[in-house]
Image 1: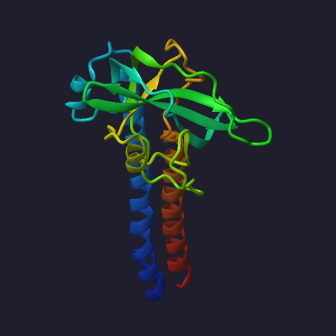
Image 2: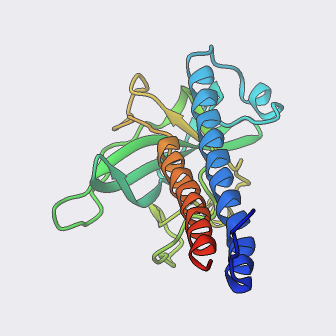
Length: 230
């Protein structure tokens, strides 16, 4: 460009960082689309008729698939997931093993709020025996950050995140690596206002705008500095 004489260092700086800013912007847009896809998947599956556990598990992605099964709830061996939040209120989620034939799956009965002293709330009488259970399959994020972990192996088993191997060892049974999250219609359930913990797609769109804005600002400064050197 006539009259445009940027410095060598400035040019190298722009050549290095401009592609990075643009790539990060498109990466954030891709993340937003991934989360919209998860929301669409959940919305598409939540109103479908429930299937059997066997039918759900042969799907390429059983996550959020509604399942109906009958089995024995082992209410004397509950698993408590600590440090849960519901509308800003801390609490626990209560999971009970269900034995259905040769399969054992954890049924998530929902959320219980903690007391003001943050102690684990006493458990009410949990449903037990042979019951019909309907819910949707859900696999938590395995990479969730853990603040600290209880080391006892008795029940109730208090965990900061789901540890399938540890729970299986305590139960003496092999667990399917899925929760079955029940709804409010399930007898004995607690607060079951489940949400998808994927974050907001609009947040990633905002991040993308910031990266693209930085790329534009970098180009503008590059042009300004090139003409200024004349």
